[in-house]
Amino acid sequence: MYSLIIADDEAIECRGLEMRIQNHFSNIELLPSVRNGLDFLKSVEKYQPDIAIVDINMPGLTGLEALKILKLKSFSMKIIINTAYNDFEYIQEALTLGASGYLLKPIEHQNFIDTLNRVLDAIDEERRHSRIFQETNQMMQRMKKAVGDDIMSSIILGQPNEESFQLYCQTLSEPYQGGIFGAILPVSSEEIHDPSRCLPEIKKIVEEELYAFCQYQTKLYQDVLYLYLIPGTKVTESNYQPWARNIASMLTEEIQKKLKMTVRFGFSQWKENFSRMYEAFRECNLALHSKEDSIGFFEEPHAKEYPTIPIDTFLEKITNEIMQGTGSKEEMEKQVKLFLKRMQEEQYSMHTAEVAALNLLLSVYDTLKSKYGLSAFPFSSIKAMQEMQECHTMSELCEKIVGWLEVFQERLKSKKVQNVYVEEAMLYIEKNYQQDLSLDEIAEKIGISSFYLSRLIKQQLKQNFIDLLTEIRIRHALFLIRQGDETVKDIGKSVGYSNSNYFYKVFKKSTGMTVGEMRDYFRQILPKKDQK
Image (cartoon, rainbow, N blue to C red; front, side):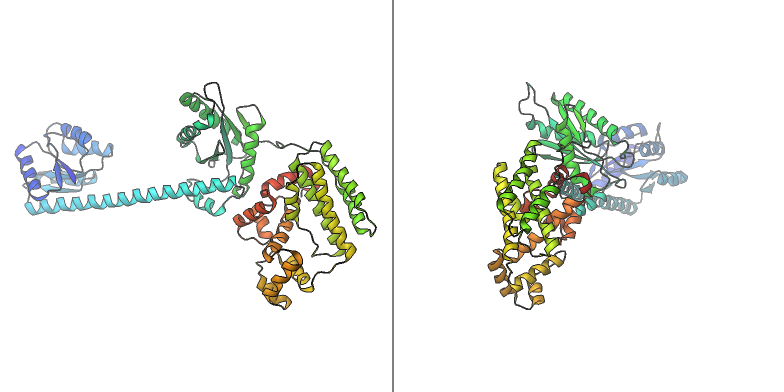
């Protein structure tokens, strides 16, 4: 359906045009005709018609003058000029002003029909394009939201999704040059006992206000509203704090005004590379809870600092006991107890002590392997970590550590040799764990069937091939985390996982921690010189 208005100072002309339209265009709704330019403008503003047939020469405000005003006001209706032959010099100007066609008085019937049909076709085409644009825009907005949700979830889970981020970057108006993570925590009061119930309303206010300042993503997670703020090229590492403080102050004021409640903010450090945003999530949480200030920024160090307990002395004594044929369990237990006692004296948390114990076992394993070349040494870092996480006291932890040291010692004492095929398979995995390995490939390399090799591995090692491969890869991942500051993606690739999301899940399932959490614990227990 279309709406049309006629503007002509001659009543008979208006009536003639109305009759033609009524007789030939049932899909056009006729609006009240007007007799001058001023009334024409008022009617256009009131009815906003699709089409107008306008006489150029009307009293007062002419049709041409009305067109100029309509162009300034950006009205999008189609205008057909209705003019006498002697007004022909104005037609060109009318077309320049946006007229879609013209009719010469007296109007020729077929020309009128053709002109109006052409205008209706143009309106249909514009509506079609507008509908396609709206549908495309809605689809893009849905996709952008889905991609944004995936980005936020991946950061919170400690595995920033680079593919989703690259898609999101295509929607940015400026090149991505960095961003920060923020956390908003509603504060309880006498009037509001459960402030977390207000988080959806806080989220709505935040999104409405942030729209004018930057690109952003938001996500509610565990009673906190998280923000990923992307300011654009004008904000950098050197000035992000005052910018973020202004944003937080503005949001605090709006939330107080609309909800009558207060909130606290925590902001991460500036992250130029998206791959490091997993750090930003932890940083904004630490900043949120580390100070009484309503707006906190993460600054190193926020995590609790533990005095370093060098393991060299303990490591040397323990490995000497293991390597001596007469080494005793009692002496090893004594060294482990001294090691754990130091941790108790320095008030290590149980989780930190567990990682410190894992570090000790990894160091013992590495020392023995380097000396004896035992590439197939029977040590499962996954099993060791899982057993230690079941401990509730330092005594229980001591027992688990000593148990593994005895395993090392027994291996050296007995000089037990694995089945030659199992030994060859383990050595092959140790040398090629970075590659995409399969049981069939390894069996072919050592000259037996994959079925027979699988059965031998289960008999000798009490685990299947996938578990064995995972164990070796996770152990090497732990060494990389302990020694450096590589991203989840880089560590995963280095130990044979091309899919960083899959590596993240395997690592967390195997160790009970994310890569980021494990790295944080290693940072707390290792001397600075060891954190390369």
